[in-house]
Amino acid sequence: MNQDTTFIYNYSAKENKEIQEIRSKYLPREESKMEELKRLDYTVQNSGMIESLCAGIGGALVFGLGLCLAMQVIGSGVLTMVLGVLLGIIGNAVYQL
Image 1 (spheres, rainbow, N blue to C red):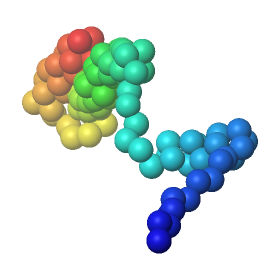
Image 2: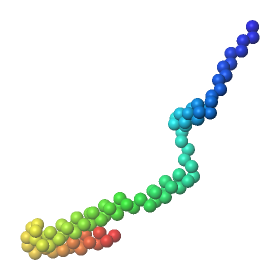
Image 3: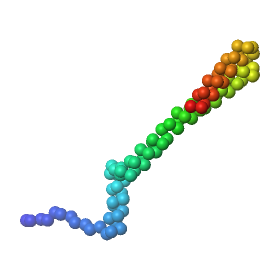
Image 4: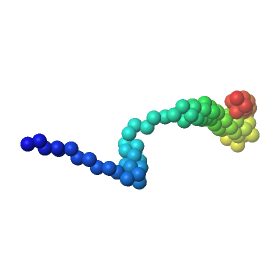
């Protein structure tokens, strides 16, 4: 009573390729050295973009507020004019960073 209980099935090349594609979707993906280098390069080049945009937009807004105060569009009097000139100088300095 010696029974052989093995099952053998041979795949064709086309089926084997499809099986490998399906299998690769579910296996953890390994990052190659070139992909890692590209990702790090992208991170380094774009790291200061958000900070510089915030500083530029903030500086332009402060400069605009100072300009409005200096031209007495908002408020009136000498004090608001001086405050507007100071805000304009500060906003310009922040914008030029």
